[in-house]
Image 1 (cartoon, rainbow, N blue to C red):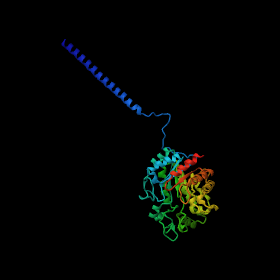
Image 2 (tube, rainbow, N blue to C red):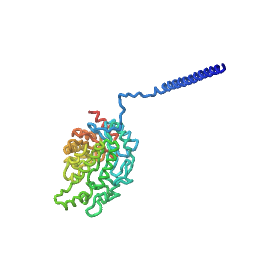
Image 3 (cartoon, one colour):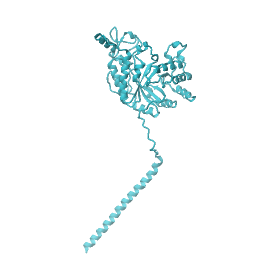
Image 4 (tube, helix red, strand yellow):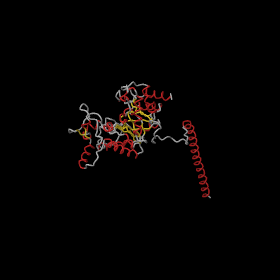
Length: 405
């Protein structure tokens, strides 16, 4: 009998404990539900409702050409200041759809982090630009991101390593002027070309929309007749061995270099363009032979060409005019028409236009005359050039001009 009572007692105790435990669990669950409901009430007013039918924009996707390019050039130093974002806002409000910024300048500075390959040394590398950040900022403003890369003008390298420069007919290495330090590399030197192509490839890998080559030519100032370039030495040797050998021209060297750069850019889906001397638009044999910039040859491998048509750079009586510096419509229209005439039909013509007061009466009429000339010539757009990046007044004039259409 005692055993029975003992078993019954244990059974009742077990049931009682289970009910308490269950009640405790239920109470904890209910408590957590209350906490969750309270949390929802706090969070819900702050939540942003995302419409899943509208995909979030990816600012890393490359941007294609707009129908009509409106570009603005900025230095690497401007990009590296808060002024950059203010300028972008002002440019966007004026309809600017293309940002051009330096990644290698005339001094020989490379403004992004890359290995010291070829002729590059530590003094060349000045990594103040985050390319991905600039591309994203441009894309947010609906602008294409274009890297300007100076080619054969490189003061740091020319002064550090004379082997990268042309030779002098009297021995030693060529200088543009005895009064100035060396600035130019030998455009046909294979090591020079190889290093520049490495720079182009490093940039092309980083999500840029376009690479714009500047100074992709031979030097034209100084005692050019005293300069001997690498390809000329090689051709002289080959001609001595083979009487049928046809020596190359400077334009052949530039064409070949551009074609190599194009193959690299195509690999990374990056467009390739080049700046050319304004006078080259006229394609006079003397200018082609001096610079190596044969528009017909170059544009076989370019997506766009940028003649730098600044009226201030022409003699006052050029084209039998009275005052060319202050006749911007004439010179921009003429240069653009001629560039289109000589360029490959699939290559865009987008001239640089003067956006500063150097040697000209700069104002609303000056900048708008250039823009109208670009439009009337049937060109594919324009790029504003101001080396000091002072554009605010110009952008206001452009807004005013566009609003009068």
